[in-house]
Length: 442
Ligand code: UDX
Image (cartoon, rainbow, N blue to C red):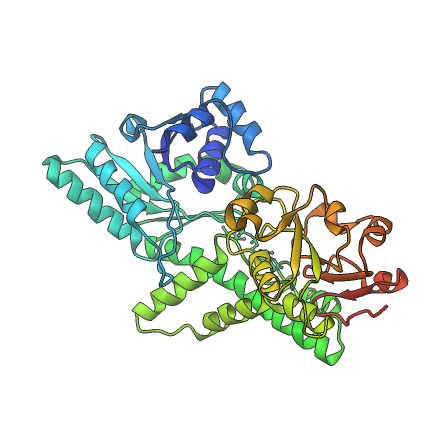
């Protein structure tokens, strides 16, 4: 089996590498020469646990290679995966120019039957558009080549992508052709053999499944964030409520953690895109609109807690911020709650010192010297009025509280991820604010 994967971003690189790892011969393609050169040397452009080792292993065993030539990669390929970016337009719709440009190139290059698989998260109906563009491109060459399109959305979590790909809870394959189905069944055989569900369905349903899954998960988070905010008011503890409702197997215990709002490259973009698609069909998705709204407000919750604590005046207050990435185990700061908090704090006159185990460079690129960068998590605390935790990195979970006390001006912590036990914070003599649990006053 031989495939090409176009786009060596996060999705393409993980897909190509993991499929090579189960025995497929994979050529990954990108227009970025420097990136391809680095990948050929085994240097990967993103932070993703386990990926670099896998790239090196599979390139050394000649199952994985990188090139800038799409045409070369398609020679003898059974399938080509389109995994290029679909950045959001200003109105929230997905910008399909890169996907369709690749489709056009594929049409210009193929001479034998191939299955063209959309892997990027794309609006419902995109596979059909891809098919039209490829056909048009073939027509302009005045040749007749058979091809099929398919949709194979990814469900990878950043920081867990390799594991998610190799041990999937399910693989979704949308095709409207028996021939394409046969090819993709062969490709995913190792997964079928090891009892991972590979669900074949029509293309529209596959495209819809991706959005519905992310929208459902985002809904759970916004729902829990609202419940958490209410818990604080009524004096309940959201941890207890979360465990209480999560024990109902119809609800399940995962993805019920309240916090400082969801971020990342998927949830915010996909919720917006689905709302927009529905609008185009004259349907208003009220629940999802509220999900977005709640998330927008939730990203500000910590700021208002801090402001209230300092009686509305943050001028000259120094805040140490632990965490920048939108979640742990990634350097990704797209739609990160930290960015909203930093913006509000600095606008209110506070000074912010940040520390993140891997996202410091990413932060510098985004906001430069709007904040100070600390060498380590404890260095960030030197002379600060309060510690604010916004990303759930493991190294923040069990900190040395004696180190914290030595450096902070006040024993004061705002915790946007509920990493610490209020009772213990009380015992240690901290003033401690978290999400959905009563504040602890020293
Ligand atoms: C998500 C989906 O999980 C994945 O299937 C899809 O392919 C892409 O989008 P990802 O964006 O990598 O993956 O992160 P995820 O771990 O799902 O977290 C998303 C956001 O939700 C983060 O900001 C996280 O902090 C937040 N979150 C998650 C919560 O606030 N509470 C939770 O209980 C879980």
